[in-house]
Image (cartoon, rainbow, N blue to C red; front, side, top):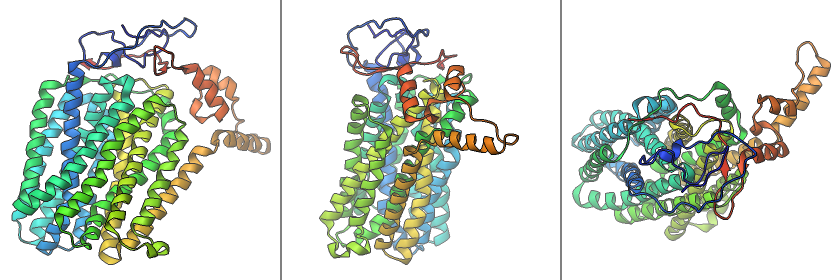
Length: 525
């Protein structure tokens, strides 16, 4: 039996609709703040269907990122062999991220309209076709014949990726609403597994079978995943679901949400830079594609191993969201040694040291990504939004939009500096970006802007009473429900947080968040 928390949505397991794999996403009790909590034993394990859903979504994450990590390893080599100007490499990588940035903001509307299963299946099919088509460009022998189809395919590939990654994350959030950060960490672990297997397997296939083989394999895997998704997933739609404008406005203005988006974008720039700058740098060691693929694999193994661990930690330990600021500092320090930047040039180039730096750097990026997603999801609920398919789609769309805005910028920086400067210049720019992201994030997250704005409005109202309205009393605003706790002072925020959060108990290892009475959590077709 699940924990019953009257007036709160159960953050452990609760099922008002037995037999549905998304039942816990539909569990809400009628509000009451004064009734006692019923203590019951915690739930045991996961059902077979839930595990199957997690396996299918994990496979999709792994296969799509095998493709993403294989391309940065083999495409620069193929472009150089065919005599294509290296600036086209940056364009091929950037157009993929640009298409994601174009489509991702609309996912909050597209996914509830098309439905979770249809979005998953159709996007996986499109991805398989894209990779098979990308393998065929090897037969082009002219610059326009190679570059033009590559750019078009990568642009379309961005559409498939945006829908599939959003659908996978929304599905696991609906399946494990009480363990959303942990489930996201598991998916990100398979993202890391894909990044690890992609260069290792892709490097071997490229060396012995040529350019075509790795992409045919990945395309076939995605086509198989589409079939598994059709058989394993339930169709959930939410045409009648939409967050109220007031809640959306609160979320968009929330300093924690803005800060996490900024730091996520900065981490995305790092990955985008790697796509065009890392392989040429490793090639200077003259160790061949097998060793380069191994270095890529070790680096991304850190992300794959640490993402689930960070998700588990963030589920068990309540951490202030401001601790995310540690992430860009670690990334900047790794770049300083990886270059190394000119002031540290006495360190010299050492392959083992570069490998260690890449491992630590990707551990820090896993920390940023998982912590950001966990914080952004909690903030959405904290702003009064409901835990339904529309809310999850909105948060996932915002999260991945931030990443791929960075990934659209990164390849341009890496491609230009690699072609015209050196890897030291790439590292110097990357360090500057990370320190700038840390500074802006600290300004956004650590300053009580709402207090400052209230004081400023009070002074302006005294001088210009006709032109500036007086600031609203925060205590009166809270009683009327017209303010967000996320824009109050830290003390006000903690007071409001305790009104909606129940701490863990011996039989309930996680707390519970109160929800507003929902309209609907979506329909299962």
